[in-house]
Image (tube, rainbow, N blue to C red):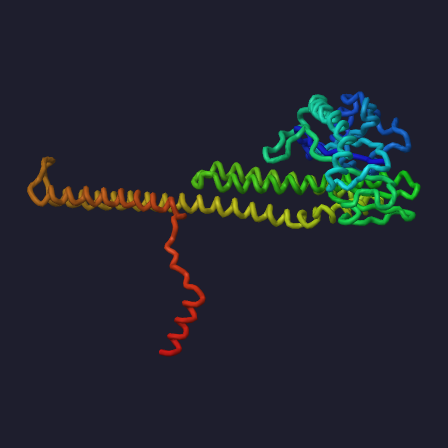
Length: 419
């Protein structure tokens, strides 16, 4: 029984999508990876029956996500294939040859343990290689094309999950969860697939190229899922930071606002790349991608992502407006204080000019008037400061009247009718 496993992992850095979309940027990155990852054979050296990422390039500008793909032989795992995406998402593809009597119902403890006895040794072999490959990618790439990994992103340089594809298993032997809950896909000449979460089934009807289309369609769909998932993580991270930020610090809010704009730009460019790539997918790959988006609820999440991003921008705008309003109120209070002090001093000067001809302390009521003026000045300044301090805490609990139950309301209505 043939099982194709493809594992997903993130690189510990991000590629500059703006730099890659510049003329020659993508080709420059691909050349760096080819010359740096020398242990991998290029796609041209892979046999026709092997898996490879085959996409149709745009005549005007290559915008496909995959910038590197190659195969190498690893003892204990056989032929291992590595794919690196311009979205800093990478995939490793291996094949397992299992006995036909191995059960694939992973919800059954006995079947799961037996299946894992074949998969776990390969996982233990591949995981340190993933970390090593990730470091190699960072080393060989031009630093101008690299960006730091966001703090809210999933950990890079480690295997995140396996997606298992059962190929041409007898009826009733393939992954039952994918057969029961997966989204069915009709492919060419009676070939079909069931795309599920973490596992899928495919029946090629003697056409080995169908496996290529299913795997590559799932790779594209996985990238879309990760883009949506990372955007949701970033939005949640910014919401937490906004709730914990100093409500009177405009610098902090402006910094977070710029981060939100950067997030919006990143998500837009990623969706642009994936949308452009989807236009050049073959029919089989496109159908698998659409089925995966339905099975993984990617489409629904992506539709609400723009609304969440816009709502986050609105929250930042309202937060900035509140800070500006607080500053205006504080400035107005200070203007009032200085105006009151200036007015009182003007009255005192006028009175002194009219009634006094010496610099010494005058006779009554001059001392009393001076004391009154001093008291009025202190009251104006202290009053402005106290009211400003109270306005800094607008979130104090307001008195909420106790709500009456439905029986109490009914009794009052009945009493009102009786009256």
